[in-house]
Image (cartoon, rainbow, N blue to C red; front, side, top):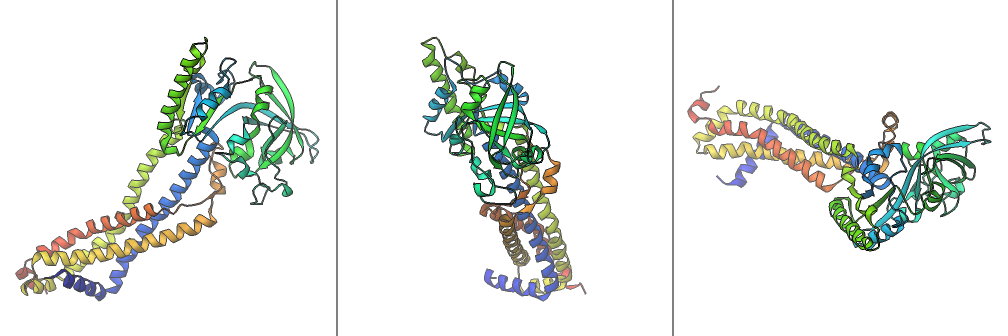
Length: 449
């Protein structure tokens, strides 16, 4: 019997019990719909966190001293990159010559205490923060700190008229603070703060900065506990002329970090050999190049979590397919006598099996397509307006770089994956009932009343 005839018969059979067919379709639609939403939300959250983690923390690769990696949480200044013989700027210039390097810049991380006496609320306040000396011009090529310059309640980037200010100028005693930190200190853009910090020699120093800009990123780490100052100024104040605590480099993409790591490692080795001729270069051989995926322990957990989430996605569709499985078993049971008559009229067991398989395939394709489409519409909408996670992010550590508003992703590959998963699992579920239908003997089937 021709395939086209079997398809028409299968379509007609599905219309005979519309309520049962609708229930099976709804189960598949909801299963695939939930998979698309869950994957869009999780991918959006993980992608956002990785982007901020790479841009604000690790870069695609970091060049550091191995001892610094062990003492990094202490914000130690005792293991710098660069010295009098081979300054950090020379190392960065060499790295920037590599064709695969997009940005290479130095950073100095140090602890500091900010105080504000005579603020607008007439109350003294002090806060301990992480100070970061950066080259703002270089950072704009990758991080774009200027995107966070906005006043409370506004969404206008760099809106100085509303009090957002601007990035600090090179060499100027200016500082960039987060809005929540500024609220605690009782200061605004244009006010001055005093900073107490320890230099690389261990001596205490006090400096006064003018607040040039206000960050409103939504990231607790930036808004509550980070202060940016110009890199050249940080070098002078911290007695680290020609040195930084780390160099971060950005290539074409995070996926090429291993290649970038190898190229920079080779460039540093060549540079060390070149300086060895003039009795220098030992400090270059001590440097290590760390890719972003080895920087944070959470990244390893995220990779494991993705594997677990994949199993959850499959489990969700399997649950939905149980409805189809049970429905098809019921259909076979109710149509046993009909199957016997079809067999007696010459329909082969293989054709009967194909008939029930086609019925299941129509349900699988229609349900999976409907679920993928609805999930895509959901993710597209909330990808524009976002999902409020303020209550959740407030309970998280400030080191977890997740904004209080999550934007799910809508990826065509995810839709194809979810559709294929729905079809594959559903077809697996209908195979047993279809096989049972094909295995019925006409004489036994016709005896059923």
